[in-house]
Image (spheres, rainbow over the protein chains, first blue to last red):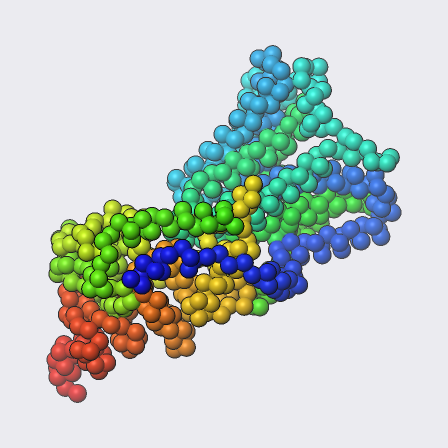
Length: 352
Length: 281
């Protein structure tokens, strides 16, 4: 029976061929999604190093890295979501929701701040879950679903804060139990030489490394690319598309929680109206880093470079002594250039 | 290495068990046989009285014009729909597929026209999508193992692909079709249902796919080749079934029919003569 012979596992042996790895390594490097943003980052770095002498100091670099990290942690999660083919416009205010939840729950229920943080984690993951669940069940574009949650969260942040505290900001939590240890984790600094670096920079790098590993070295990563690239095909070969998407929204929820905790323990008090508009910064960082708006393409490293470009521009303008009003203009111009450059790289990749 | 073997084993275990359970059948027992199968959707009769067989190492060409019932036939064999009359036999035993999964477990794999590939992903990631090989304590992807296996499986079928890291959208239509078929075979298929694999392809590309079908046949797979091109069907087919408006118009083997007759039948046969007469040409 030939058919039975073909079912024999021996004929389906996994063959290792060490030559496979060596193929076209240079070329593959050239078409990586983040390459365009890497060039951009180098050019912007050189530009500000020339026009703004204070930009060259290690202290300035530490400030740039700090600005990059608060955007970068979220950009990392948002990049994963975008590779998975979805958007989250509620991510900016979700950060504020998380810090408000931790602060007010702990303050008003007289809890240890760590318990408050844990409850806030639950809130953030729940927001992510609701976003994801609504997107996969209703099949309405995530742009619309998360635009709705964005508006709702903005309202909740203001209304609930006023209801609970009677004002638009939360009370300071700096004298509460658990503050010092939580501050160590989320908002401390350490020094290298004489330069003080914020701990969020380390978290940012760690999350980027983990996200990169997950994307390229795990089965879930393979599924993220597949659900973003072609959800119907992914479903046809047995990929749990809905679970992956909900998981990605919850990852963004986790990122929002982390950044929210940083803000709480760095500033002690939270303004309920903040965070609006940041969702675009995360998306911009991911897009500058090479993520496709249509999904299925991009890297976490690219998002990190995108966030770094954001940090350099944000601080570089200040160091150059220009009017910071120009910042948004520069950001917009860079986004435009990045999108055009990435498009050119991708076309080159498709042609080879 | 042992982990990979375990993974492979579990991936195809369902199929392997099936083949052990079934009595060793002679070459005569078809892998799949349809007897008087019919399907109606409400008051619409999509298929009626279809008889069809495919054995190991055989290609059954199913020909038909648009609306002849080819898609319905595929859906029945693939387990998406249940027939409303008649019966389907797998390895000589009456079987009703409740889901596409059951059909896959019996080793019946369907390669649809859209192929179920993700364009931007590399060939090897597409090949193993949903059935990834993993190794090590962190269950990381065994990328090199999957690359080499993809290369090897394609090579076995005579497809030489120098770079399995290229996005699958950069391959030609014929190559993509071959990758989709190779994937079905590697993951334990015994019977392949190919839904118009040459429909969107040029002459040269079609040749590649036909050669591949021929290779699959020689390796002992049963192939149900759905097409509306009698030339393609005649090149690789052992049996031919012609559908017209849900009915079976023809059921014969390669020796019983010439390409001209097949083309004539496919083009509408007697109806075409009547039409020519009517139009007065």
